[in-house]
Length: 289
Image (cartoon, rainbow, N blue to C red; front, side, top):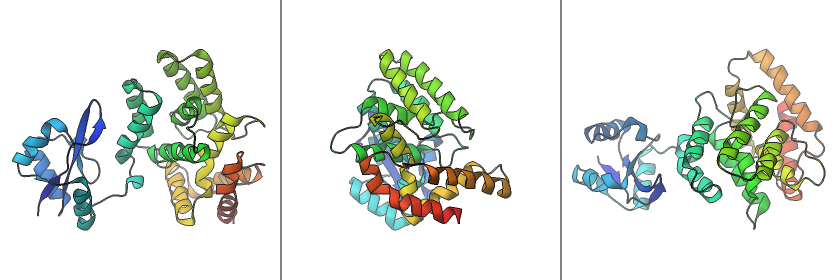
């Protein structure tokens, strides 16, 4: 039985972080953290994130220093590791790195958006979805980078989420307008982000709207996933509406699926159609059946 710590190599909030794990049990890990006065807020599902300033003291307290790859192997062998895409909190660092590539120097805005995307009532519409949309934009725009206004629209498109179609998009657009103006973005760019966020209400950009096509395709890319991924998506959507009875949910969901099947085109970019259209139609028709 041992607690392990890797080198402080992970940048965030002006410092670098290490990971602290147990190769035996979470009880052992929590006991070590408590004895070392590590805050519960630093726990991230299967490890603690600890700042560089604590590394030497934690080693002195008994944590075994190992390379990052060794720490990951120990965690996997213990059976305690949680896959990153199945937990929203674990996505803080990859999302931070993406944010800093888009809006460096706006940490407060990042933290506000991260908190919103991590709200407890979200299941599908959480941080995993946000990262998936950003990654889908990477694929659609490869080898170039996605335009900044499209990336920012992805960050804001479900920043307000209460499960009310249309209203959520309107409130998210208002939030984008307010926060991006405060951040000092040019008015024309703010207006474009707002326009793009509103497009995600019906995913029907006009012909020739390249930016709108990119965002809408990225947002709907989940529809073109493999059967297991699509099944997880369906379960997460159901959990988002757990307060609605089965019969009412089934009727509402069927209406959504029919509307998606009627979209022509469902995907607006050539690359999006090639990547996701066939699987999306198969998944949607299977769900409706």
